[in-house]
Image (cartoon, rainbow, N blue to C red; front, side, top):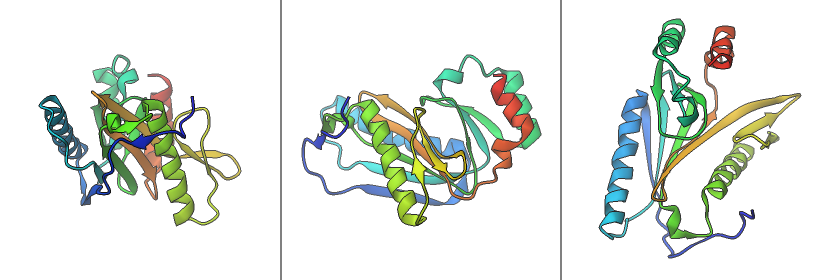
Length: 204
């Protein structure tokens, strides 16, 4: 499937960006996102044009979020375990993907837009577009950084071995996007690399 042929059905040069400087609880960011998505869905239902697509950007307090695939596997006991050993919350979400860590030093970006307003932009191509945007941004900010994609969703840094630098998980409701991409700038990687965390993830 080619992802190179898509275009907006109508020209709109305005992209609203709302950045939150404070480190927020994940649930607060989720409520902000849900309010925007609900407004767009209601406008679409009533055939009212949505004014402008929005990009939200956050840093969150230490949180592990589960994608749809982990909904069955993540028991209350496992949630309590992770919350106890790392003092971090576990939140189940509606996005695709598996478990993702969020915390200070990580930029979380949620584009809220209507894919049906773009001719030829399917969900898989949208995910690919997020990956390419992340790669171009990383290469611009860190000259010489070798950011790449693999057969798995996300972005990696190829520096004597692949290390994941960006995770992607999205949700679509009537073509309205939510969730998005998280980029590791300078997070505390013990929340990912701690052997107890790795064991917990493997045995979900």
